[in-house]
Length: 464
Image 1: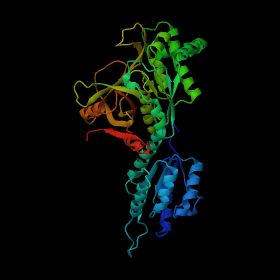
Image 2: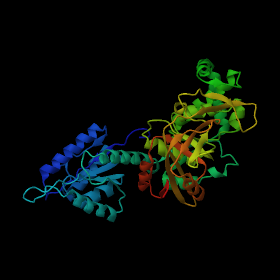
Image 3: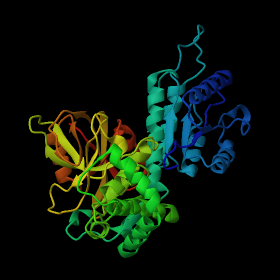
Image 4: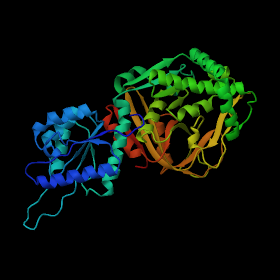
């Protein structure tokens, strides 16, 4: 499910004391809307009479059916009232991200009778979910065709997809050891495994370099063709001999091969200096190409890879994400900040610039290979998973690209609601300068995802 929408278990709820006909009508309306919105779901038609939960005796068949279907999350629309005991037990036994909602009730009939008391049923069911310790997402009681339903469901599905990262487990490959002077990327691997099901697989740098160079040697003709096209689409400076670029492509292909061989969900990479010296070039172009397919954390940043995974999955894998850095404030706008780093996916390049492969502008070196281009404009979400001493938090914020001065490597200036507030929260929290970024606004989904990850607290980067 790493790049796909989750499978929804649709569990319509009714109660015998209200109109069964009206409950059926709303069940069918909800099914129709889910199909219109291209939501993959499994319902209870053919499992229960009318496809509605109306008795606590229904708990066993419903749980068995959804487990067999391997649903990823649960939707409990209350169609006329609610059978709260069944609702609570189904949600507790499945232990999946759970969505609670019901359609707004119409006016009473002319004789004073009511066909549905949906809001009343929601209040009863929510109390049982609280009593049983079941976390859930709630959409305000509203009409089926109100925008709240569609947007709320979308947020919930994205939250379910993101939370699955730390509920069902991921494997992150660590190529090379942590660079000594990056104390900020020290992590507690044992705690990550025990609490969040994150397995870190160490991969030897010497073996990696040998395999990457063997790939460059054995793929010379294919790489030569690729490099010819690269020199047409990018400005390449400081690399006259193709062998260095072939080594860079070998690094790319070896990373992807290791990911395939070991079933890795992301890569933390010791970006320098061993692999650079061996390749005869900086490898940020290889990192950019890998990032099109899976999260890559430069500078051995395991928490950065987790941040990237959470954000990428909240997007349903629709577009690559990038592990950037908060670097400097905008020179004239107090709410502007520079998102910057190297190795951004080329698919995020601004359409009005030509990418350049050139020298490192900070480190004195004769070697080339650093990637330089401005990122595209648009709405932006940033996220950082981090923690110390057993307390883990997910910082989430949203902004918009803005005009700003040119600089080098991969960058975009972002405007937020109140940068001084963000800055203080980041400085005083357990966070570092690395932050996953994606185009689009997914903050609500990531904040909601934390409900479903025990031990992970959300921090919304925003003015209070």
